[in-house]
Image 1 (cartoon, rainbow, N blue to C red):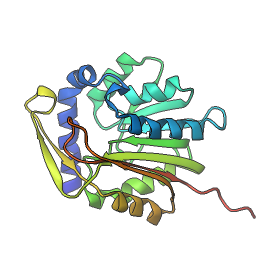
Image 2 (image 1 turned 30 degrees about the horizontal axis):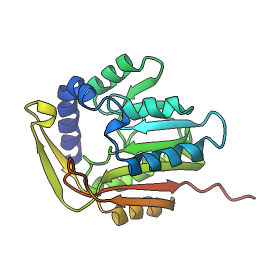
Image 3 (image 1 turned 30 degrees about the vertical axis):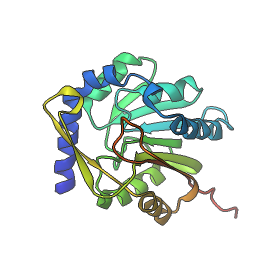
Image 4 (image 1 turned 90 degrees about the vertical axis):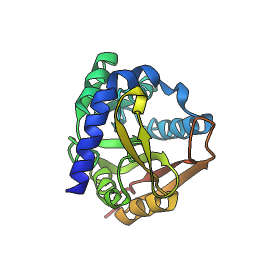
Length: 219
């Protein structure tokens, strides 16, 4: 029940700020160089095979979805906020965007070769991470990869007047070890981890982990 209430609060907040969010963060120019190096490594890994399908989970208004698409990946976006999805479709009409939850994605089993969760777990408490890891595992094909970025730390912080609106967002902090453990408990294999210091515009260290779903063993 608490997770459902949290989800509804997040959806309502992002519905409210969607238009402003797209104007404040329209593309990848906000990202640090190290962050984009992880994204580009993820892209290069997936592009080793043609027509790789990728799900941008928690896509917001589609800035990272667009970046992946321009890099040559077959990408679609999913977000819990209908307004975020509406704005994303308006801004990026050539891409597919759907409303959905990261622990209940509107995708078939083994539908994707990659999952990008770019700061989409920051509103999920630690207790919700196992369900998210299970869902990423479900939608990925053997040999697929997931790149997950988040604020590093423990506890949470409150974002008041998010994007200039009278809304409040609770942002969860996660330790890289905890996120990695939730993934490896599901069966994923760790491939890379980044932890970097915060910039002047950030309040905490930032982290990203890259995990693989192993290929099925040969019979």
